Image (cartoon, rainbow, N blue to C red; front, side):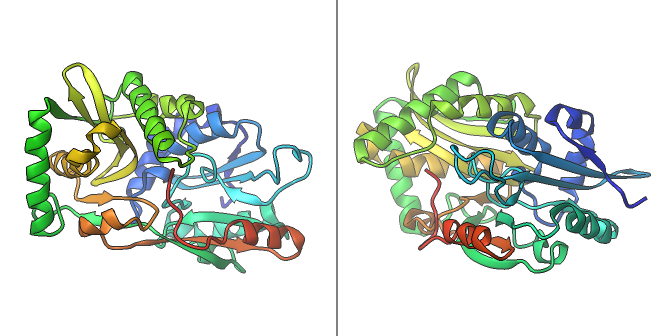
Length: 344
């Protein structure tokens, strides 16, 4: 009764998607990154060649636990050498608030399976939500990094933050309207590949003009298209789009799950920065997400100052490692940041 069904390919899990979403919704830490939408798209597109195991525990009323493991490569040129075990969905794609979804009565079954599967191997659990209970599932884990993930409660005046900020946003909105800009909300299921392409182009252009590197490039298009295909009315990619006539000049892109909107990436025409377009995009996203039923605006990883001007408070994800020896030391050195890591 305690043994799971273990799957070796993402297509094998498709029949369990609805039950998996229901299980995630029952957790005290609502996270899009724990849903089958993110996990299966990640496995299929970003890590198809990695050894992986997806363990499912079934009960009389549905799915009761889901645990995904994969092997993180040491280096692209060292594929034959086994790297550490890692949680499915982490690494490429930059997920926050990860965790395994486990009903309380399945806790011991999961602990035993993880112990048999990992054995004495090194395990990396990157960006695990504080309520995911990682330390209770794998004895011997030690924290190596805490990542601030600021978030805002949307139940107060919108946009959140000081009255000075709200006044500034209203002023910038008027200026942008005079420039011919309008803003629209695209709910899950309404974001199109064209919007995604506009976002990648605007984000890349701004990165180039400001001289910073980004991993959010056209190479990730197929992954995000897979997320778009999996969207339902209350789960998946959503966006605020700024247009000047027919031209898209700004996109703020994130993920709706339950009553949380997680802000993932943005891009805008740098020539409109003097009108505060970046700030107005965030303010509009807060208002639109709230109108759609969201109660939390999650900025995800990174302590950038603008997030706190909107009144955000920190919630910290933790990166855990278990193991000893050279491999474990390499994992620790690679995943111990000097400061909060921002998504680029």
